[in-house]
Amino acid sequence: MTNREREIKEIKARLERIESRLGFLFRRLMITEEDAPTGKASPAVLELAARGDKIAAIRAFVRETGASLKDAKNFIESLGIGIKS
Image (cartoon, rainbow, N blue to C red; front, top):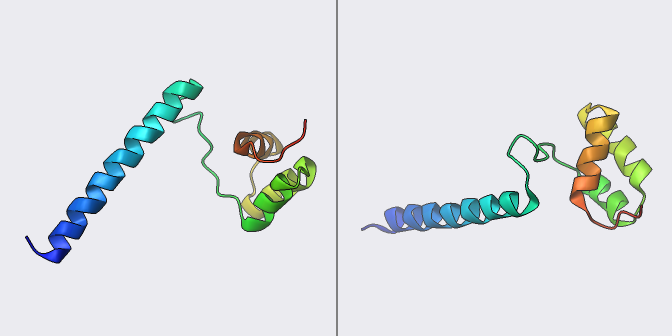
């Protein structure tokens, strides 16, 4: 087996472990793939969320992604980092 083949095999094994853990988390959180957030937050949005500035994080996410307010709110809340209720 070449180094490249070994590397591909290791990557596939790692991906399987990640997918298994993700499946576990989905089951544990009782969500489906359709319920899972699909957007990507920029470092600026993540920083706002981490500081607990939920409204600014939502606004920034909407501005960056064009998401609806509802989707942005759901996404930011799904991050669960530093958000104060």
